[in-house]
Image (cartoon, rainbow, N blue to C red):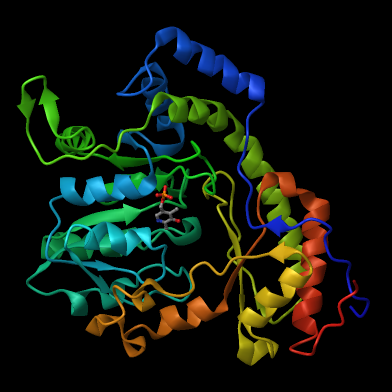
Length: 388
Ligand SMILES: *Cc1c(COP(=O)(O)O)cnc(C)c1O
């Protein structure tokens, strides 16, 4: 391609939240006004919890005001302490949910193809202080749940999954939350399914569910009994109402994302130096992100160069996850944070680029974005003459 593609008139971001018809939401708001119940497990909350069994499975569901508080509450309910093995290739909330409780996150390298925690490296990081494994289903790619489960069982460790990206993901026909002791889902506006802010933990153990419900409401058991050092991390009725409107839109949204993924796959697949993500199936994958990889040694242009040049075309791609959590100030002095301990994560973190990916983008824009990405990559690090 030699003709430089046109840039976008308006900025194109990596995502845009699904929004229901305003009138659909206000109907729910009317019901809330009628009930005069705004929080503490009201009718909207009860109904959303019920509806989410469809995408999240038969486990017990606890709803939260955001995904980070859901994680923090799960870490406490699982009684994790000392050291917990986790991945550096994730969002800040993952290690923070441990460190906030005074637990040391021990960073272990990732697998190059799934970009999730590499089970082959877990054993070597286990010490007598290790109490759990906290892995992340990055972009909705399932971790190697079988191998992680085997190690945890053999070593008596708890398993917590950060499934912030994995709404509706299935592994061999089973919902992703069937694996591990607990799985967190984020319902932040940037996630596929959202409640503006919100989250959930899904678990199989009823006692754990009871502890979670207690902890998310100050540890209050009844009017005169406070049983544990709880917090307030409850989802309110307005969040739940928005969720009830948005959950109806998920299937159509995924169908549109699938079409966009097909455009990216066919157009960018023709650029041999770009590594494509694995093909996702809307029935079993979340389609949370579409993340390509750019290897400077192959393309002659670095990911950062592509990222910066795309901005000149009004395309704001995101480098999820760069920098690695192990390079954040609170963690970078840990011995396990050394780059030599995390070579795959560093390589992957330097290559990933998430492209705009949301239903309302439409296939015509996806075609234009593909052409711009292909043009930028193929013209290498040469200064691209930008048509004003
Ligand atoms: C979004 C996200 C979270 C945090 O969820 P919030 O609901 O924003 O608090 C945690 N982990 C990962 C991997 C995320 O992408």
